[in-house]
Length: 166
Ligand SMILES: [Zn+2]
Image (cartoon, rainbow, N blue to C red; front, side):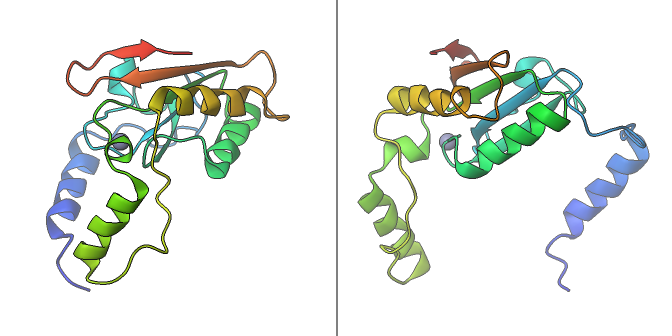
């Protein structure tokens, strides 16, 4: 093992000693909320909604897309983990909307020093129509009941505000 993680593990020990209060807590979503959002480091999914650990299920991927795995998470959340409201939240200035597939493959190929054109990154050409499509995927899923509220929002990384789109 290397010490690549030493600073993080030290911070974790401080966290466990000084801040952590969730021991023995269950894993359900206490606020009944699930969020599908981007992996972007500018997004703090709990705090932007006034939530705390224990309140929500969070699923993240590049772009905040409703993928097969996101649907798996949402079905589990709805049926086993108390989820009643689902927010799909892509954001402004997302790298997945700023590059074409070829451009992303070229940049990653340059960084990797080898061809990356075989790898799909699922760039988003039209964020709002992709969002509408993603919300539709959740709403129309046979295992997501009709009484679950599903909304599509864009998070503005420069103001911290959410705008409901669908
Ligand atoms: Zn993003």
